[in-house]
Image (cartoon, rainbow, N blue to C red; front, side, top):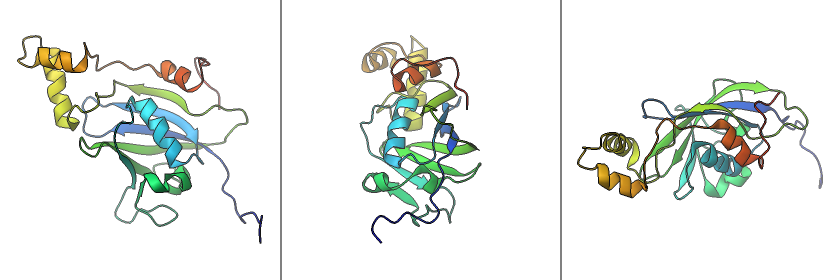
Length: 198
């Protein structure tokens, strides 16, 4: 029947997620709160901002585990299906995981762990960055191995590639830089108190 509602609509919950860039040591990670019903298209945009990427490359979402699939039976979701796929199609309960791959050439894989499912209070603002550590690698640095070489060259002024890397990057690079409040201001137009309840 036209206009008929689904029998059991899924309630909107607040998801607390930990996003960790695989293979990088010390770890680059973010903890962020989002709505459970966010589409993967919008979640991709959130990940780009919280990690520090510039959305210049292709990406995909992938279920974790040999038998893991979305509610629709997919193991991988790429851009054409992202508008119809919600985050809670992949992640349903704490400890569920998925992978977000960005830049298939450099092969950056982000492990996304659902740490906590909470009530979705009225008026809550999402996304909300709860914490994190270390700067995002530069785009096109060459994946995990290229990033390690980049850091080595940037760290040591006598390194044979130091000047070249400084010029390529456009100046110094601080691998420890991270500012959760700056990210929250970016998402919420300058509105970012020290913490958010709920």
